[in-house]
Image (tube, rainbow, N blue to C red; front, side, top):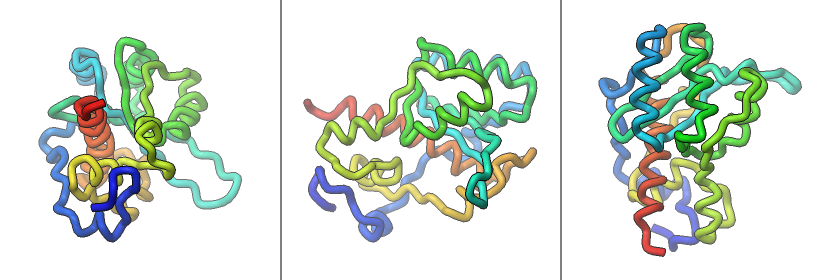
Length: 200
């Protein structure tokens, strides 16, 4: 691997063993109000969660996204997938985003927060963008979740463009979409804890 202040290349990452992440059976899609309430309770109890969003891609200049279409929160052993079209989940989504008692950690969240403000009319609290943590460690380039997993765990977090550019506004998400979304959030949480454990 390259020195700590130099991010690994795509070729170096590709040679690493695969990052396991969360399996499908630890990923829960919230579909009604009762599930949303249970999810909120578990997420809030965690105190710190991995966080990310997914949106249906736009295809031409000036096209405005209606996202985020998926919002994912990961605890230490499971992930919760909220779809913004599910009306009964709206209150839960907003309560989690607005809570300053819940730390939400992720990568490159500036665009996510802008979309959240546009769609929900709120400004999330308790946000920690881990890219800043790597800048403090001397990285000049933007470090995303895949590079972070390679740096800290010596593993390859596979991120397929064919999945990232799928229709995230779909009413029913595929297993591959669920695993992709959940592990973006879960990996961010693992990176957060690993950074906390590093010697000063």
